[in-house]
Image 1 (cartoon, helix red, strand yellow):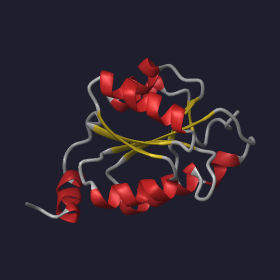
Image 2 (cartoon, one colour):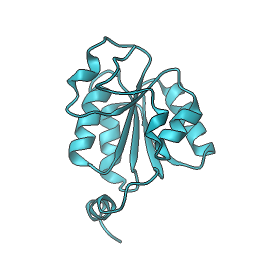
Image 3 (cartoon, helix red, strand yellow):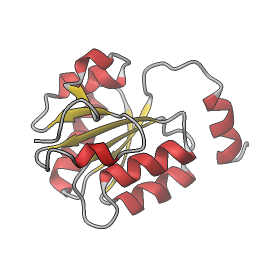
Image 4 (cartoon, helix red, strand yellow):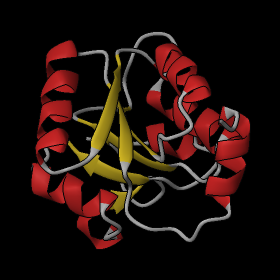
Length: 147
């Protein structure tokens, strides 16, 4: 069996396609668990983390995760900091951020542009994003503030 690092390297060489396993990250347990259940119903593999720190631990041990769906506003590391860390360490992992509130300039602190979908979101839009349709998102991080 190959190590997680070797699996990630080979995954990075694969052409970008729809996500197969999504790590859902939200400090609000009910929202995270509901999102996981809905994504499971749409055929995705899922894992859940209730903090950015926990998400990084899960990513380090599970090379099958190819996407992260994270809330922006969380205690400790924020979703923005998580997105930047994931982008640096796991460049092949697709990142989608979500939030129901925030200040207008909050997403401008990101190193990169990330897909963003506002809460409350419809699960069909989230599914479309992870199946490879970026037109399903409402805006990219640099284009629209979190409201």
